[in-house]
View 1 (cartoon, rainbow, N blue to C red):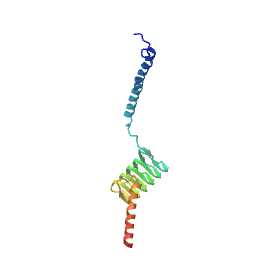
View 2: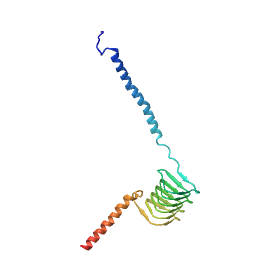
View 3: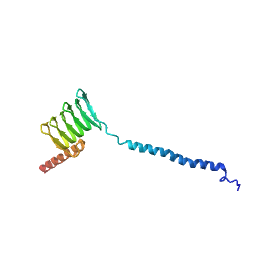
View 4: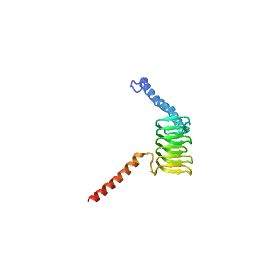
Length: 179
């Protein structure tokens, strides 16, 4: 009953006892972390922030880019890229506009790219519109061309295949004429 083997010594069991609680301690450390992560996930789908509004007395020179929404009431000289872009009746944009949704109530001088483009009755657009879907209300003024593309937000992808196809047809026509 009283042996001197190291297995039965109290000093040998003490480290094992300390090692065993270390696992629950790490489990306890991860247990509070799990509610923290779940709290984070619960708060992750926050309410969408309101649109950034550029007032009618504001004049911006330069490009703007956001993943959110912009409502322009003033004047912008530069390119704008946003998720939802609303151009107010008093607004003037001189540059390229790119957004998932574009609602034009004011004036744009430049190219418009959007998945959904809407020109209201007060819209004045001087430039090309590249879109997936478009709506033009009666009374809107538009001077330019309209082109439908499946992916109007990425100009490089659509332009490259379009430019290659005519070049190869032209080369084939030249080869046929020479041959």
